[in-house]
Length: 232
Image (cartoon, rainbow, N blue to C red; front, side):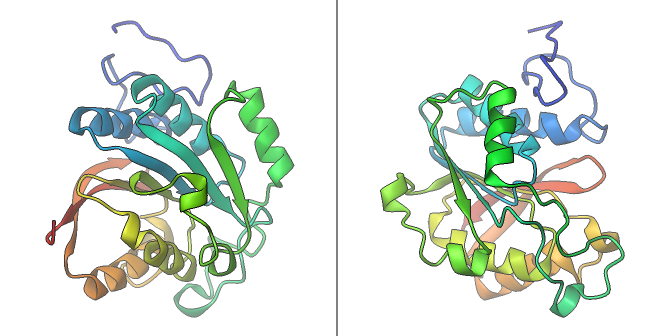
C-alpha cells in the first residue's frame, strides 16, 4: 500500500506501506500496526487488553489497527484504568522525578468522548473497567466479557507495584504468541531496579515456564515482546 497517509496523528500506517522508524515520534502509533500484523500472520486469536488508558491515544491506535487487520479475531478490547490518574508511588518507585500521583487523570466520560471523536465505532466491542488494579482485577469476570485468552496486552502503568498486579492477572490469559507492549520500559532511567522492568524481572523468576522474546523497541520508551511458553 505505497503512499498511504494517516487520517490523523493516531492512525497507524499499514505495515505494508513504507514506514518511518519505530524509534521516531510516530513509533508509539505504528507499533500497533506491527503488533496487529504479527497477530494476523501468526493467527493468534484473543482479546486486546490495555492497562493504563490515560486519554485513550494508544487505545485508538490499537483498535484501528486490529479492526483493519484482524476483524473478528482480536476481540474484545478491554481497557483498565483508575480513571483518576496514577496512585501514590510506593516501594521501589518512591522519589521519582518523572511521575506524580494523579498524573494522566482522565475520566471515563473523557475517554469515551475521545474514542468517539477519533472514529471508533459504537459497534466495536470496547469495555472500560474503572478502579485501582488491585481492586478491579481480582473480581473482573473474564468469561462474562468474552475473554478467554489474550492476543495482545498493552501495559502502560508506569509503576512497579501496578505492573506486578497486572502481570499476575494476565498470567492465565497468555498463550504462545501473545504480544506484550510495555509502554514505559525505559522509564526511571531504564533502570532494572524500578518500574515495569523490575516488576517483569520478578514475575519471570516466579514463572520460569514463560519466556519473553524481544520483538521491537518504539519511541524512546517502549518495548514489545512475544510470549513463549515452555510448557506449551
